[in-house]
Every structure is written in structure tokens, then in C-alpha cells.
Image (cartoon, rainbow, N blue to C red; front, side):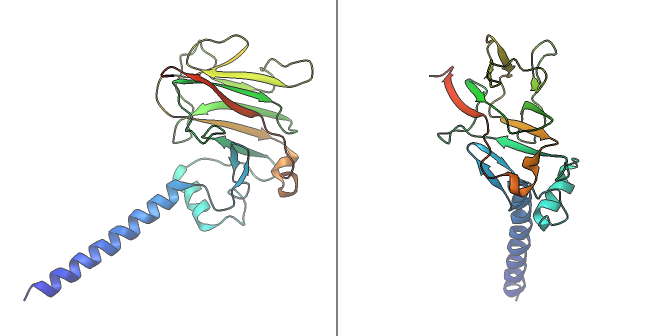
Length: 195
């Protein structure tokens, strides 16, 4: 007598639970379907525009962060090295090259939620176009490591995985036509504490 209502209740619980979990997963997975990828860097140029897909809009609302308009800037994120290994705070990385043309840029290490990693105030936790030491040709080299490094050193706390966030402000790269042929800084893993 109670078998049929019980089976219906279980089926509805699975359906609603699965739907809710898949929606939460989709909102946490990315900032939209319009991703571009340049080497290890990826960005979502349409995430903050009127033509953004519903998932990008929901992601933006859930994160509660102000995103740049298409004429203001573009945020690139690197979560893996060129070999596809997740960035880890126990490793040392070398970021070198140039950024695309921009009025200014910023670089910092972030946690999974996109917030800057906590580092002691005396340690360098970010760089920008004015604070980075450059080579004579205009390029730069930044060592990202938990251990002190000579030159440009971006300090990492011992917390596990992280991502690098490069924000280009007032850049022609923010327009969709400027994304082809951009030279982004290259990232390489130098070594890790565990080998």
C-alpha cells in the first residue's frame, strides 16, 4: 500500500536533488561558456557583458564580485602549468615574457574562490606594471615561490593549490577582435619541495 507512494517520493527526491546539485556544480565550474584560452591562461570576455549566458550571470551574482566592462579590462587566470599539473604552493614557478598592451596590469596568487592568498604584510603578494623589475627589452621575469627568490618574487603561503590572476586594465585585448595573436607571459614549473 505504501510502496508506490514511497517509490514516487524517492524518485522525486533523486530528481530534485540531482537537479539542484547539477545547477550548483554548473555555477561553480566556470564563469560562462565563452571562454578563451591562450597557453595556460583562460578568460571569459563576455562574462560581464549584456550578451552573457545565464550561467555567467548566475556565477557573477553568486560570487558577488564586480566584473570589468568589455572596454575596461580583462581578467586572465592560470590554474595549471603547461604540462596540465595543478599549480601548487609547494612548487616554484617562473613567469616570464610580456603582457599584452594595456594601460596597466596586476598579478596576484588566488585561492579557489578567486580571493588573494593570505601572505604576511612584509612579503610581496602582488605585482603590477609599475612595481615589476624589467629587462632592457621590456620583458620581465617573476618567480612564484614559497621560498625567497632574487629579483621579482611573488610569495606563496603553504596552503595547497592556487591560481595566478592577471588583470589587464584599459586594454584593446578586452575587445573580441584583439584576442587573436596575443602574447601572454609564459609559465613554467622550476621545481617542488617534494621533488
